[in-house]
Each structure stands twice: as structure tokens, then as C-alpha cells.
Length: 287
Image (cartoon, rainbow, N blue to C red; front, side, top):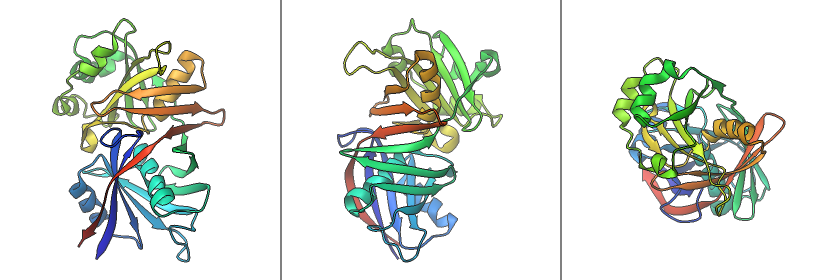
């Protein structure tokens, strides 16, 4: 059996930046065990598997597909960068003729529109709730040490804990943090947290005018640090939209690779997340 595979760097217009995802357009479904083995072998934050819903469709004419995402250790419920990468494979490599593609996923229908060089994803918004920092003091200590924090919020829908650094902190505080994934994972075993977002206010007066910065860690899903995380911005977009009083936000995830996301928080409980993508590898898995 031969399976086509692509590596796509998402949320960037430069190779080796953004977040790499493996994408496998499949002619038929595989077993869950094989999905997981392939994702473990690819060893990227996520590997995406696209399958046809209507047998008479193909990847050029079809407009609805099934999409699943696997980390190196488990299947995940929502993944932004691998969704963007999947749409890029269909639009660019498969020359899909539709203006909008819809993916059926664990998080419902997710639509992606191609607009020039950008892909705009229609995602659910996941508003977080404010929490007592003392309830999460161990994980906060493991992540930021003695640096001052301003807010602690939890998205129970996504099991993502968001910790905002105090506005007195410079961006270099966020970028220079050395977070130990093993210490992070051992500090939180309640099951309430599967991902940690660290964020801080941006520099809207300095070009290109980022409204906020972030980093994201998910050792609970086999991901020590994720370079650029669309799903985290379903939480961040909600939080920062309210704090800044803005619907349109420009975000930068300042991992080592780095990536830029354009956000539009909508009034219908959804969020548009836009970014670019670059192809860096095309190959065949032979089984």
C-alpha cells in the first residue's frame, strides 16, 4: 500500500517557519491503529488524514471531506494548523475547484476559504472562564517561575489553561522562558489541563502591530511546545477581543519557528483564523 504524504508549514509564507503538519489524502479509510502509527512515525505536532465522504467525489471536485488529526501519541479534537495545511494540499496540489471546502471533524463542520495566498478557517470560539491562580500554582510555577502574572483562565471545552504574564513584562520574558515539558506534565495530572497557553499583551503601535503574543505547550499530547497553534487561538481570540475591545486581531506566536495569525471574532460564536502555508515535502509512505 502506498500513501501520499505532504509536509506543509502553516501560518507562514516562509519554509521552515510556522508549524509543520503532515497531510495524507487517502483513497479509503485506514484503521485507527494505522493512523496512530503513521502519526508517530511522522513525529510532527499533528498528522492530518483526509478521506472522501461521497465515494463518487475526488479531491479535485469534492467540497466536503472527513478530516482527522493525530499527534505522535493520540487523536486530538481540534487542530488549526493541520486543517490549514489540509486545505492547502487540496487547493494547491489537488487543484480543488471549489471556493470553500468543508471538513467533517470531531469539532463539527469546519469550513476553509481560499482568499489569494491566505486560507480563512471558520472555527468554533472557545471563551475561557477566569480561575483562581492558587488552584493552578504548581503548573504556573513550572511554566513561568517567579515572573508576575495578571490573569489565569481555563477553557473547559478544550482543556486549555491560559496564563497571562503581567503587562510589566517585556516580550523577551515570554520568548526566553525555558519550559521543561516533563515538569509541566508532572505538575498537572487532574485531567483538567491538556494544554498550556502563555500570553501577553502585544505591541500594536509597532509594525506590524501585533495585538498579543503567545506560546503553547502540550506535553500531555506528546507535544513539548507547539510552534503555532490555531486551536489555542479559539481561546486567545475570545479573551483578547474582550480585553482590547476589538473584533479583528493580529497575533504572533513567538516560538522558535514563529507564526502569524489573523483573527476575526464573530458575533455568532465563531472565529475566523487566517494564515498562509508553504509546501516543503512531498513523498510516499510505503506499507
